[in-house]
Image 1 (cartoon, rainbow, N blue to C red):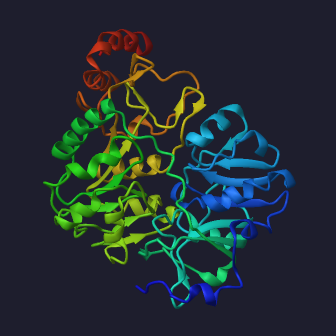
Image 2 (image 1 turned 135 degrees about the horizontal axis):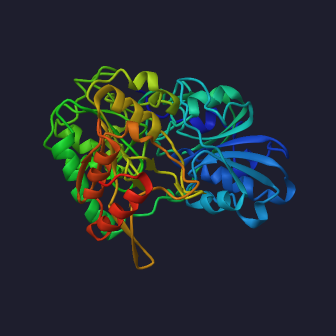
Image 3 (image 1 turned 90 degrees about the vertical axis):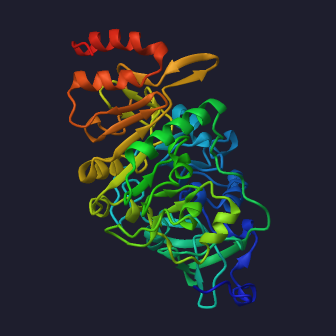
Amino acid sequence: MKGTDPNWRTTHAGKLGSMAEAVSPIRSGECVYAGGWTSVPAHLCTALQARHAGLHDVVVYTFLTPVNWDLPECRGSFITRSLYAGPYERAGVRAGNIEFIPATQWRAGQPPPGLDIEFDHMLVPISPPDEDGWCSFGGGVWFGPTLAPHARNLIGEVHPEFIRTGGDNRIHISRFSRLAEVTSAPPPPPIAPRTEETELAANVICTLVASELVKDGSTLQFGVGDVSAAMPVFLGEKHDLGVHTEILPGGIVDLVRQGVVTGRKKALHPGKIIASALVQMPPEELAFIDGNDMFELYDFTYTDDLRNLLQFDNFVAINNALAVDVTGNVCAEAQGPLVFSGPGGQPVFAVAASTSSAGSIIVLPSSQLVSGVRHSRILAGHPAASTITTHRGYVDYVVTEQGIATLRGKSIRERMAELISVAHPDFRAELRREAAALYGVSP
């Protein structure tokens, strides 16, 4: 894998300019793809926002962005459409200022519903080119390879620190009309740190999952969230694990060094760690991954393609929930009718793991303190207009710090008993009464 061409600035001087110059071709009424999470070119986005007074009706597609497109001065200048609501999008979605697209269909090489359009411009964070002109998407491929052919004009935000990996993690410099080099640190990702209470619950939950549900030789997926992203630290006693996931969290590198993650038993990409993006990864782990041919990053539409996932045996999908009802229906993206995040890849990974291996696991603390009041996250029934992210039929286990609820093959009555047993003790009696009234059977 070749490194950065030391003369790239001179070779491509005709394309290189300031952030403001790079976004200057964007006009009113055009469609712009501005990336998501770790693939957001925040400096280019900020430069585009600075032009708000001279623009109107620019449609910006993004998700889980560290850039706030819901600023009062930007409304009217930009129409924002998001596939996954983060902290900077949540209020705008709820107020009707940002359009939310609940995308769940992923097919390798095809733009997902909601992004299946021709873009006027695509803003892309990239590494500098190597001597053959190839740039990487760094630690976040996301939808880059799939959407780039559907954009008339590509604008690159060049990050000298970006790593290189195998897989689909490259794009040629010739595709870009303009480049701007980053000279200051980007904003931090819009992910809040775990609370002390959640940290304690996660330690117990991950220990239970690792000791009771993850078997040697399993292939793992880790969902986004407070609990599942902590999972790698607890897997040190396992053998020959594999990884195929959309999001690769920190801690995997240590498992590789320890010989725990080998990928030898994987049906697809044996010996390789497959992901679409690296998140919350410390610099020393990024340095280990850089140029390491064991790590391959692919387009999100490939990592989350159900046809690929169903090829795995012993597939374990570990995903988070905001709440689970006593029959096993999972809500991971809304609070009642109010959008909180998005479905992401949870539905397809849960379907694949449950179908192929009875390995669909949902993890969450049993309760949560909100403004000093404790609320159960195991519910008798979800509030009106709630979204069901994962149907109960594809949930094999629910794990809280109170224990493991085994749901596969269980009746409604049995499911209720299992889930109430892992609810916080303060809520169990109330849940039994509410469940009996709702479903007409007593757990």
